[in-house]
Length: 354
Ligand SMILES: *Cc1c(COP(=O)(O)O)cnc(C)c1O
Image 1 (cartoon, protein in one colour):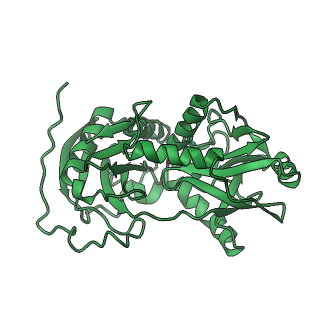
Image 2 (spheres, protein in one colour):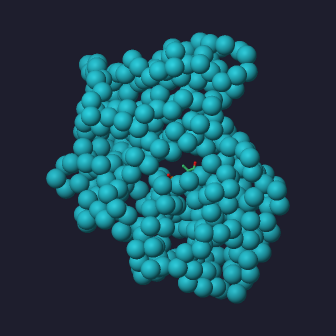
């Protein structure tokens, strides 16, 4: 396999020494370097790693007007030996291309994605915090670069990766509200693409819920608002009468979460009964009323597992007890953490060591 040559311009003003790793706020500190690639005349090229910094674009940049922009989110961890471990990077490279196809954007060879990631993380390895709970958040993204106001798919694009250290934080349980007015995604829409516009559209409904005192929404289907789809920017799972229930991802409205996929794989490994089907809001309400809802949690890269402690359905709040140490969600969180920090064997080759 031919390796991709990526020229590096190193920063002369590293921010490493002025970054307080003991008080990291998510997304605030950015590591020293970024990877850049440009797509022109039908091919990716001009690969480079340069100091993180502002870039020039034209006011006519098509992304600013018509929103052709997609992204990924993933994390790297440091094990006790100081090696950098990336969780399921190949899956992110694949999903970026699925999003690209839906948004009329070009495919990026997975080898470019992975090689760029390896070289960027090797250079900025001191930015990967050490210690359980801390990680380096990685943000790959692609956007249109044409300076043209006609509504059409852009001819030129930029792909970039930059990273941000994230401190150990206690992720407190979240309260959620079943949303029955606004819609995150509808059939035939862009729900399964990790497209920037999906996030823009979710801000207003999320803000309304926050004003009412809830952390996040439980999104329902756009047509009938009768079936649970996702929670905020995470997939969501419920355990009812011993069965793990989560929405299927083949209908085009649910983001194919890599954490979701990993949790389902572990459930399978452990013989945990899984039902990939839509959970009706009425069924959720019934299970909350009769106490058969055992666990409810969001799954995504940011928190891995976000325990839900309050659910509002049709204007009524239901409280959920804290998950027990032997609960599925507790065990799956601890197992995923052990795999990510290289403390246990990696049974599914999920880790890329750098
Ligand atoms: C990114 C994302 C998820 C979670 O995906 P992971 O790969 O597990 O981080 C779930 N839902 C939505 C809408 C997302 O954008």
